[in-house]
Image (cartoon, rainbow, N blue to C red):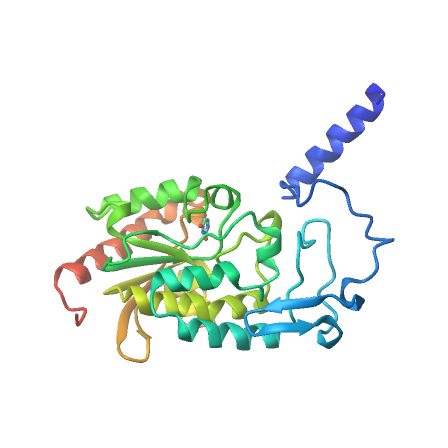
Length: 281
Ligand code: URA
């Protein structure tokens, strides 16, 4: 390679990095222009619902350089959502739910992520936090909230006299979206039955949603986080309701430190709810 070519490659890689393309999905490059459409191959697709012939599967979403499946193809969203509901319902424990997710092929994000990011902390915790989706650091570690925003979350937890190991932490989406892109509504709907079952199994006294996506998905609201944070909700798990509150996502607080004072008010309200035992358990 000439030094001009090396410079071009370096500049291209720098451009990719800035665009969020920061991981290689395979050892060999794939020429998408000459690769036959995956949906038209005769290869069957494994889903939690069983083996589905690809001929029965609709056209998958357009693949991009960052979203190409490493292996396997997810079924269409409606089939995946149905099999996610079916599968999540049957998980009798958190361990069973994790095992189930490990073998669930219904979400295309699984094929681009390095690993499942299931949860961290204490499964018997009275306080549970739910974020949106793992980022690069979490994808490497296999644990939620271990990067910069995770460090701030640790400090937020410490501010109310608790340790990370006292609480339970998970995400709505348990696989890193490539390049940290926003999960699609379909991906969110496919993962929703699993996080709902996870909340039900942990059965915390207080559930805290971090940021807009997790709040809007779990608390079923279209209100923005600035209007809705700090208010109590009833989160219904069927057999009981759990007190739930939305607060700012730590990644947002890193960008907007002025709003930490509002997050502090939320944390104090959460600590009071845990202390006064008015959570009904
Ligand atoms: N942001 C999230 O929403 N979740 C993580 O695990 C990390 C960053």
